[in-house]
Amino acid sequence: MKFLSFTALQIKRKILSEEIRATDIVNMLFERIFKIDSNIQSFLTLDEENAFKKAEEIDKKVANHESVGLLAGIPIAVKDNICTKDLTTTCASKILKTFIPPYDAFVVKRLKEEDSIIIGKTNLDEFAMGSSTENSSYKITRNPYNQNFVPGGSSGGSSAAVSADLAFMALGSETGGSIRQPAALCGVVGLKPTYGRVSRFGLVAFSSSLDQIGPITKDVSDAALLLSVIAGKDKNDTTCADINVPDYLNGIGGGVKGIKIGIPREYFAEGLDADVRTAVDNSLKIYERLGAKLVEVSLPHTEYAVAVYYIVANAEASSNLSRFDGVRYGFRANNIKGIDEMYCRSRSEGFGNEVKRRVMLGNYALSSGYYEAYYLKASKVRNLIKKDFDTVFEKVDCIVCPTSPVPAFKIAERIDNPLEMYLSDIYTIPANLSGIPSISIPCGFSKEGLPIGLQILTNYFEEAKMLQIAYSFERDTDFHLIEPKL
Image 1 (tube, rainbow, N blue to C red):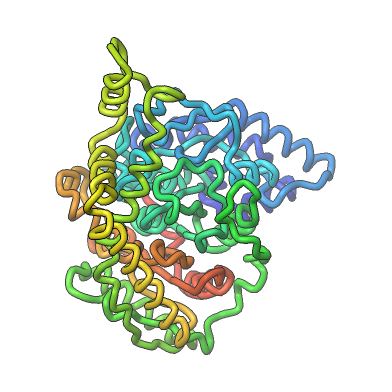
Image 2 (image 1 turned 90 degrees about the vertical axis):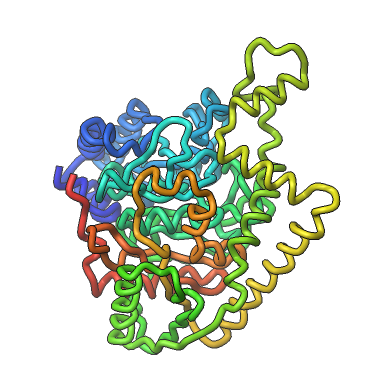
């Protein structure tokens, strides 16, 4: 079972050198899932049969010295709002309980082309709306470091699975921090690419101008590998950029000597947990020792980011979720007497409380008489937030700050306080509003032994630089090696 704690790159090397077979790894992985995931609750659906078929295919290729893909033999989990052909995709919602997509998302297609082994679909907040994975219609995922605490969200299932060695890699999605925040809370690496770097084709839409798919991995090198596979132009997504995809692993070890790191004063204000502050301050000292220069910067419109986000995201969500009406696919209420009742009851019974709350807020923001006061104004402030980042990146190479203002919080502690829950993403939302890339890496632990994440942001399409800066810190520390005791 020792192999399960290896990184994806390490396990790939073992498989290619024939030290171990892919089928053996898959067998060990499912044994562990069946043993401990009843406590963690990271998976919604497992695909054991196809995983073993793919593993056998990889073993034959390796034995015959045939060429294999970049992810050959690596078991990977996929967030359950990303379409997988012939495998249930529920978005953790009752309304899509029996939905089986007839096609693969672009990113899933790329995983298969590069010989990865998809082991199952992971839990999330319903339609990715949440920061704790408590809003799932099916189960509550728990933090592997302490099962009384949340794993973060909405990609809590993917983050918990990687953290608990139930998957070597995972795909997550984020709209306001749903990759980086749970990655920080679960002690793993989570990367949000530049908007348009990765195709959204096959991602069930929440907020189309904000959504992005990205890697959740055990270390920075694995994140670089997975991003290299899923990034690139896709004709099915008109927002996907036609920009060359570099080999993100190449040059990752370049170091940070001479790099200018921006420290945004607004991210170190009142409300930042003391343990998080200490961990981030210590991380900045490490960067200084490694040769980076720290520069204080200002992002003055950050204070409006959460308000802007919850107007823009909810407005777009109310439009995107209108397709779930009980007519074309998904849940339909029984014993209905007319089309109006069918629409009303199917949506009322099919959606959970948080989704209904956000749809109502979005409809209100778009309604006649309020559009200019809310949505239009929010869009204008969003542009100011983008300009703040443009100004800062003229002076520095990257920005470093906390990923989350707090470590993981207890299950049920914030579920009845939406505002407090929304503020969990206060440090991650600005990157989504502006479209820039960002990564969260482990940088310490709280007094209770819960992981703390460090966030690194760079300018548009500078993922290679961002990964280099993240790897420099990781190489000098061992926080990513400290696993939960399960």
